[in-house]
Structure formats: C-alpha cells, structure tokens
Image 1 (cartoon, rainbow, N blue to C red):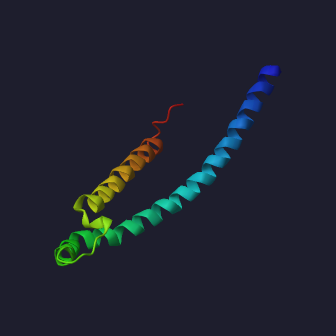
Image 2 (image 1 turned 45 degrees about the vertical axis):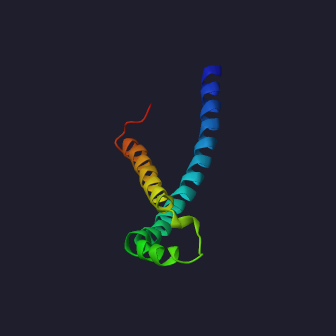
Image 3 (image 1 turned 135 degrees about the vertical axis):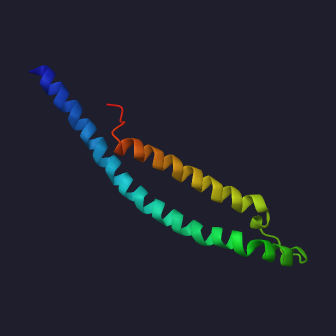
Amino acid sequence: MSDARERMEKAKETYAEVVKDNEQLRTTVSFLREAAARLEPLAQYYFEEWLEDLTDLEETEYENEIMNEDAIYTEIADQYELMKQILLIAAKYINDERSY
C-alpha cells in the first residue's frame, strides 16, 4: 500500500507542476501572437522603406540604432529561428514523440 501512496503523492506533485506549466503555456501562446504581430510592421518597413529612409537620413546628423542594417535584420532572423524551434518542439509533441 505504501508504494501506491508514494506513486500517488509523486503524481500529485507532478500534477501541480503541470497545472503551473499550462498556465505559463497559455501566457506564452498569447505572447507569441503578440510578438509576431509586433515584428510584422518592422519587417515590412525594413524590406520596403528602410533603405530609402537611411539614405535620406545619412545626410543629416540624425542617428538611431536601427540605422545599422544588421540590427533589424538580426532581430527578424532571430525571431524566425526561435519560432521554428518552438514549432519543432510542438510538432514532436503532437506527433507523439514525447519522452515517456
């Protein structure tokens, strides 16, 4: 009987952790949507208007951290790679490639 109790207690502890995990996952899903939405106008600006604005502003004393071409591009590429990692983890989970 004590083995059953130990297993049940361990499962109870794990259950509490999973409840917290799911709360965090709900927050994460919302955050991912917001992050993607924030990136969209920046990427659009970068690929459509940024170079022209940079050319115009280089003739002035105006300085801004995103005048460095690598700054915006790196963040766009980083978010893409991070989203791919998240997608891969989710795909493995959905395809039942979990570790149990």
